[in-house]
Image (cartoon, rainbow, N blue to C red; front, side, top):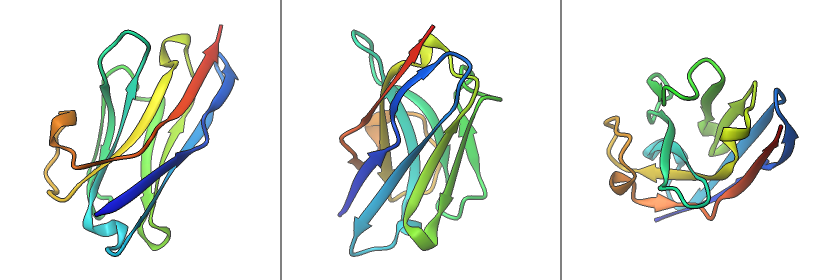
Length: 125
């Protein structure tokens, strides 16, 4: 089992940037899991943001964030990152890190086995 802890959220003006981090702690190294970021705004369902494979060679992102958000990982540090640029008010949400043991890409939240508690991102217009 892996524990995930997100950090880096906060309040930022529209057009600004934030970098979210997800630290994984478990008896197994972070490279054993494919990772993803999801987000949930008030009154809305949890939505897929980005995915990265175990080795980091394959990534995917939701259309709404392509060209603005970049997912990356550092397996030596057991960490996954989400660089968010050109932030918009509609990016305001609680952002969650998720992990799964299967390496295949999926944007379905039900397919992820482990979740962090989330970090709040608020973008002011």
